[in-house]
Image 1 (cartoon, helix red, strand yellow):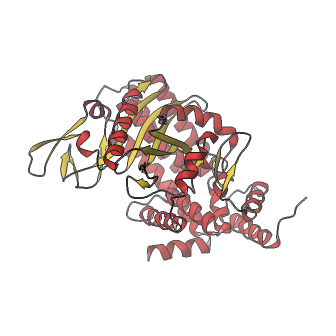
Image 2 (cartoon, one colour; image 1 turned 60 degrees about the vertical axis):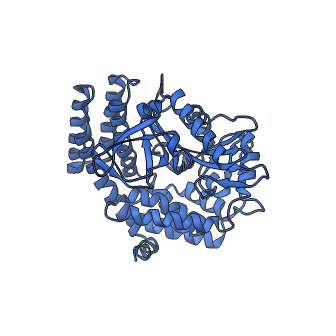
Image 3 (cartoon, one colour; image 1 turned 180 degrees about the vertical axis):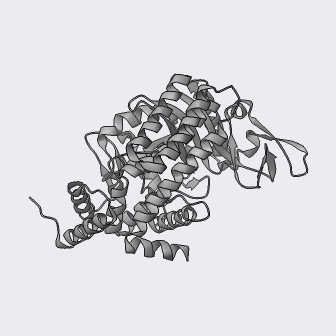
Length: 440
């Protein structure tokens, strides 16, 4: 039986002491297992394969993935994934975000997927045209089904400043396409002078930019509605074998768990092209996201997730282990409640698939979740807003938005989530110092 090294033991004891001081519940056995595993995660390869399930990913990420969840995620993945086209399109589907960290997050958020899509073509223009075709075909073929509803996708960048509805979008920012617009292949808008203009799907194909698709799904295993997204990292492989990312940047592989061992060859081919500075680039990207999360519109729950990824990659295992425990806290359930309120809104306003009773059942579960976690005035205030939301849904008329009720409920939830994560994170001096340094 191996023993935990002295340095790791000291770090564990410091975490336990900090957790006790801050009132954070600890699973000491799981804490010790994780710290021992991550400090021993060495070897020639960064990639670890779970031979029993066939999933693989970065060795640090794999420590947080629960293989018991794999069949559930593969089933949902059938909705969001792209098909291979022999000799033309190669794909590798992975989990990302909280979905890839199912062992550490008792209360996971959305079902986030990440897919590498490599397009083999003679020219970049041809590759862009192929991507344009398969994205539109994917969305149209998965507009709705027994347990899912397509919500929107990101494709292309605005060629000029435009006004859509009551919002202004600047040239170069990502274009959001809604189902009817994808089907029509065009978006109706106006320029800043009020002149009518039409943005066609084909006209933005040469500048695909950020590519992402979103659905609401009925999760059969957890008996709840969830958001399922698929963010694409698209590359063009030229006849000479040169691989070029269509958005100008090839993503790293530090937060993905790949679901099919058969996609290992395409994964290996692509990651060979990743910059030698990719981990530093990835950490810098996360640091910028943390800055946004603690800025004018704070989301300290999201900041905690980003900080956890930073710390576990740069070797600050003590800080990472402490943050890891926060997501098992009952109050962290409210982070999920915040996301699910928006899911309920999308299900009622943008879907004809889900019946009103199932949506009301979901709202009931949100109310029960809050009652389990909170007490006193905080509980009363959030439950009051959720009951109003429940009442509005039961009386919902087609085309009437739930916006004000959703925003009020989310604001109350976010206030408590922010207070919880801010208090606990900054209670650990090293994390507080790190956040202070980021801000300055």
